[in-house]
Length: 321
Ligand code: DGY
Image 1 (cartoon, rainbow, N blue to C red):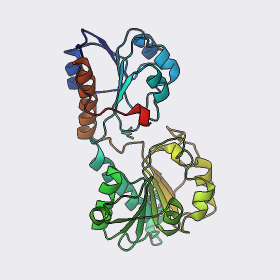
Image 2 (image 1 turned 90 degrees about the vertical axis):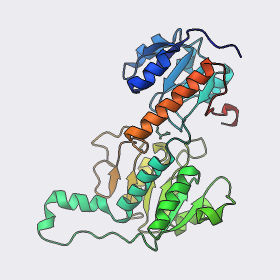
Image 3 (image 1 turned 180 degrees about the vertical axis):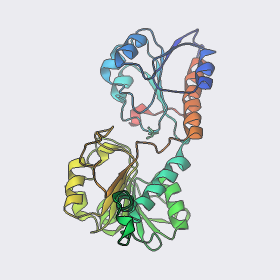
Image 4 (image 1 turned 90 degrees about the horizontal axis):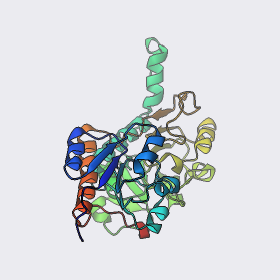
């Protein structure tokens, strides 16, 4: 393939100056990160490449505003914010940053498993309320001997299972397909329904698709063990927020620790945000200085590879969805 001469790349997500400079050596850069969406539309009129993250909506309208667009590189593994059918219709390439954040997200996921299992939400609220001067703190449960149910068992799930085993947890998982490496992962397969009835803490790690949207609804919460907890480090819309509030209100489940919410960002006066039994972090599974830099460089490598007519390091197979 012939290398492309001085193309225009639009950067629509905050990345370090080192990443911008790397791209600027090869392309004209228009940086509209954190700028109003209208400026992104304007910049795309002559753009050939686009750098985004999971917070930028790349819908059919945006793609239509970019008649010369050939490649979108997202600084994320998930790409549910991107209309891949609209990209496919124009043969526009897509890359993500898979492989660059596995351990980092597993760390946060395990942190939230501890938060949920040890009931740190009520404990923090108890300290803030001033009750520490009198009664005993609310108790949580042991991780050792508890069952962790991981829904969506890819590389991050396996890394989470490793951490859980160190704490003496039993690990079960559900997945689109049953894995054959149980001897390595130490995790046993269950159907989604069976997992819900058996796990003390359920962790959502599935990508957001038409099949997983609202996966955790009333029926799922009904099936969960009384007193179990939910951790979501996937996408907010995997959980039906109203159903979650109903399950918590009814005491069906004991609490939740959420790195992602629906809506996102969550308004500070939202019923979920005001609860002591729910701990919320601001979609920061991969948000460490090192990992975000690694992700941004990988996204840039994909753009540069395309500019040089080389295979992308981490392409998304759009046809496979
Ligand atoms: C991902 O990579 O998909 C993370 O959720 C950050 O957006």
